[in-house]
Amino acid sequence: MVSLLANLFIRNQNDTKDCTVRQAYGILCGAVGIFLNLCLFAGKFLAGRFSNSIAITADAFNNLSDAGSSIITLIGFKMAGQKPDPTHPFGHGRIEYVSGLLVSIVILLMGVELLKSSVAKILRPEDLAFSPVVLAILLCSILVKCYMFLYNRKLGKRLDSAAMLATATDSLSDMMATSVVLAATVIAHFTGLAIDGWCGVLVGLFICYAGFSAAKDTISPLLGQAPEKGFVQQISDIVMSYDDVLGIHDLIVHNYGPGRVLISLHAEVPADGELLALHDTIDTIEHELRDSLKCHAVIHMDPVCTGDEETARLRTLVKGYLSEIDESLTMHDFRIVTGPTHTNLIFDVVTPYDFPLPDRELSNRIRERVQKDNPNYFTVIDIDKQMV
Image (cartoon, helix red, strand yellow):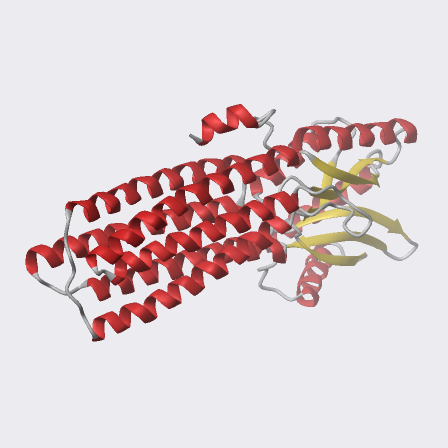
C-alpha cells in the first residue's frame, strides 16, 4: 500500500537524499500509521471490553498512543522540510530527531502506565471472556503490525531515518506484545490459568524497551554522533581520486539533520604546484562532493613539500616510528627547519579517542624514539584527536 501511494504522490521518489522527497515519505508514512493504528485501537478496544482483558485493552491504548506518535512524526517531517532562514541557515532537519525523541517519550509513558495497571490485575485477577471474534481481531492486529514493521524498516534504511527505524522497532515490539496477549487469552480459556496480568507486564516491558531504544537512536545524532565509516570512506575516495591531492586530514562532518550535512577537511597538495590550477581542483572536488553525497563541502589546501628528498626521507622515518608506538597513529603537515646545531621536525599527530597514552607522554615517547637514532633531530608536535 505504501509503495502504491508513493508511486502516486511522491515525485522523484528514488532521490532519497533530497529533503523534499524525505519530507514526502515522512508525511505519507505518518498518515498511513495514523490510519492503521486508529483501526487497530478500535478493534482491540472492543475486543478488550468484550473479553474483560486488561492486556487487550492496554494494548489497544498502546495503538492509540502509536497513532499519536504517528501524528508527531508527520508534523516533525513537515517542519523538518522547512527551508533555511536567517536564524537556522542550515535548515530545520534536526526537528526529525526531536520528533523521534517525543515519540519515544510517549512510548515510555504508555509502557509505565501499562505496568502499573497490569500489577493491579495480578493482585485482583478477573475472568476473561473468550470468542473467535477476539482471536480474529488479535491475529489481524499482529499481521497489520508486521506489515508496519516491514515498510517502516525498509524506508528507514532507505532514507537513513532514525525516526522511521524507531517506529519500525515500536511496530515489532507491538507485534510481539500482541502475540503474548493472544497466547494469554488462549491459555486462560483452555487451562483456567489467570496469567492476563503477567502478560500485561510483559507487554509493558516490551513497550518500555521500544521507547528506550527509540530514545537512544534519536538522542545520539542530536548530541553529535560520529559519521558512518562508509560515508567517510566515500568522501576519502572522491577526494583522493584527484592526482593533485596527496592526502587528507582533519575531516569533520557536521550533521544538521538527514540530507543536511556540512563537511570540512584539509587536502594536502604539492607546494610547488600552480596555485590557480590547485584552487580549480579543490573547487571541482567540492562540487563533486555536493552532487554525489548531497552535502556542502569546505576544503582547506595544505601545501606539502614534495621535491625535497631530505624532507621526504624524514617524513617516512617518522611515520615508521609512529607505527612502532601504535598502528593507529597518523600524522600530517610534516615540515623541517634546519639550523646550525640541530633540525626541528614539525608535524601533527592524530590519535583515536580511546588512545591509552596522555598527550604529553605520547609526545615524549615520539621525541625519545626520534632522538635515539638521531640526537640532532628535535620534535615540535601538536596532538589532535581523530574526528571521524
